[in-house]
Length: 485
Ligand code: BES
Ligand code: ZN
Ligand code: ZN
Image 1: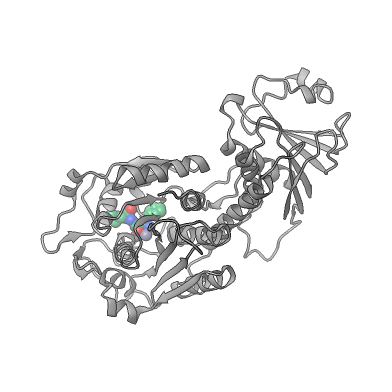
Image 2: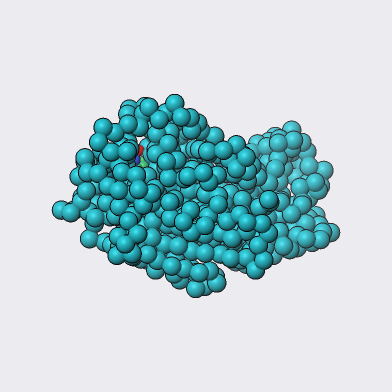
């Protein structure tokens, strides 16, 4: 799909379809003439994502005018536009339209809006059908124009940024969607190598021997039940001239399949555990975008990749492992594996010089109980950095909710035989998981994102196909791009 900027007005646009946003309780003056009857019928309410298609609108050159509800004008923002663009694209694509213009009129036409429109279109276009061989009457959109009548300086850069970010988010969605047989830790590392080679990033993959030498007992314990060897993927972006001494570390959980291990999961829905590397896929997608957008801060991504299997060499409940940090962990439940591999990756990130850490992980079922499938749970060990991450998320329309990390919860993490157990008690499971990770972050500002409820959609939305969501790629990219101090 080609995407470009356009400066023609509604009357001048000649695309197969033109999309215009209409608002609740308003009659769009430009459309009063072509749509007089429709307005009179009350069919256009402007409610969020309501779609109306008009053929041969009077007085316009386009063959179709698609109206998409933007909700209340006062609440309209780039996040709403992103959804509108995605929903309109999917609606028109289903009708075999191949050439679409999105009209952005005053006052919704600045860089943030242009980028959001481009993102909405690219994200809406994604289908998780890579492995279907029978693509019956497959439809495709060839051209999308974002039309800002009269134009404006700087919009090309915004459009390009939107395209890069959304294509990177789609890269993450594709990767996250790969089934466990086609994406083992070794193959994930191979994909990371290819990404690095294509984008000019440095890539290093630590194998089992190297991890043994270093003493990554927590990560290796998880890996030992699988015939597939683990890999610790490290990707580096270095700016030509860095401003300041900060170095951002992005750590993503890369469990290519989580059976639970000896503490095996029930079979119902277990297929969803192919998504247990979504955090890893997100940090790789963010690196893809950053390689092109070139922030002023160095960024290192780490993806501990393992398969959690109950093989004959698998770790047992009650096993005690020694982490890279030196802390011993009693593995009371082998299904709480994400925190074990992240523990060693967080320690290693600090050893590589990362000063600020963000991890993304499909870590706990408990976060789904807390926040459902709407908000990402965000846990941070300090106010300033946590607010920066939350601000980046809200600017990107990714919903994050601040969760507590309070020392009172330490009571929940007591082991009789080791420094730490890998699970807490019955309550506050998402918090105890985060408290466990905190033990491995030293004094570095750190934010943990539990994406177990948000990494994929069980049902599609009008603006997004079902399957992996690509959260939190956009937030990670913005955090690095807006780096200050
Ligand atoms: N990968 C799962 C968490 C998960 C659950 C992700 C549902 C997405 C949807 C994780 O490794 C896990 O199994 N966690 C356990 C922890 C428990 C044993 C303390 C859980 O949440 O049940
Ligand atoms: Zn698990
Ligand atoms: Zn898991």
